[in-house]
Image (cartoon, rainbow, N blue to C red; front, side):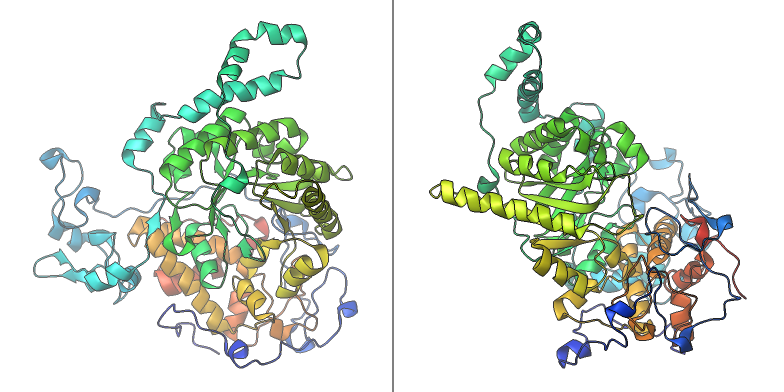
Length: 612
């Protein structure tokens, strides 16, 4: 068995030996036609007896496969709540750096006695603070659970490595307290939107009768006053998605540490989690955490927003453009199938209101300055009634988007069937034909290409290459394939399967934990947050079936493996669907679980009694 605590000492990326030496890809034991529908073929020596309990996966994040279902453990644990860890002595945040002075002084309700606070803390979790080792200082200061590794005990002063700090990466797109207050008081200036919105409303009114237009004189006058033409995509900063390795916007798991890890393994373009426009405009602290990005994402980071109303998407775009210094595009979510989003009129609901969707894109493009606007859509809302081809044609004709991503499923379908890459390919051909026709008719007019990206069921380098070569898309957006194995981008680059060992995969988990501590903090609250999101990540990564034990490649997420054991105990542990095993894994890097920690798995299928 590999020692689970033996992991790489650094996070420096290395080219896998198989890539560096030019070794051939993992050999296929059987051909594609040997695949049993809905079942991953496991080599016989790694199969477990049928008496063991089968884990049921029944959720929107997994595709249906196989007919056998365990009725007891289906569905989601809705309304999950997570406790917040606190110190036994509540120390003042203002002076946690050991130098600042609290403006409330003796009237502050929190503890200011440094020695008393340090004496109340439990023993350190280890000899070295992961964050201090990485960036040369620890933002959590005196609250760090590895405090004594960067504290001078005699003077109670914190240590800082100036040289390492100067070279360290950093987070950007943090909203200032001043701007957040302006938003909360509805005083943040949006001059472009204020002038533009009456004009866009008048476009909507053009569908009314003549008498209704006359009755709307005020809107008509405002529309007439708007004369500033918007920048065309060709006039904005360059957006190049040609054969780029793209990580899809992902809810919950697509957080900054996970995106940063995918960058480490070769992703070239990443997106924020979907941020709702209205909470952004209200200055919500939680929502403004989503556009935050790491310096390693520079040059290829998009902020995705969702909105049900024209004014929300337009004003949110103007606010983001004014406050976020690092983004390469603003993406409008027109495909989210979640009921709460759909019923509000946002996400995939916009597919049935195409005129409104186009006005929203026009508004965003007009107020976004040099930042290009893009959109992510689905085939449609209902099965057998796709309308994406018509929509894509209109979007390109209007000229307000720099890129379109098409997810090859309907809203109704969710993940019950495979993505329709035939439809994606047909839509890609429409895009190509439109540009060929444009080149013939208007040779002298410069028009920048609208990138067309495919999305859905990309779980291996072969899926990615086939999509680009056979279906004519400019690139492929990878979603759950990266959740299962973040090194999928490394495989795409190498054009081969990489059979990561259990120790290598544990090192990937360590990387996520270290990035998470840097992002959420090394105090009790930050560690709890980091552990929670690490468990969320493990709820996907455990579904990875190592290439070395498969009879047929590539692995597909919709195929369900029979119960299997790994090539060693650690590999078996990493393949466990029991959330208590995920917590055990987290303890290798984050220390023992705090008494307040409470993690309820998203899916009931992961909350089951172990096999002992």
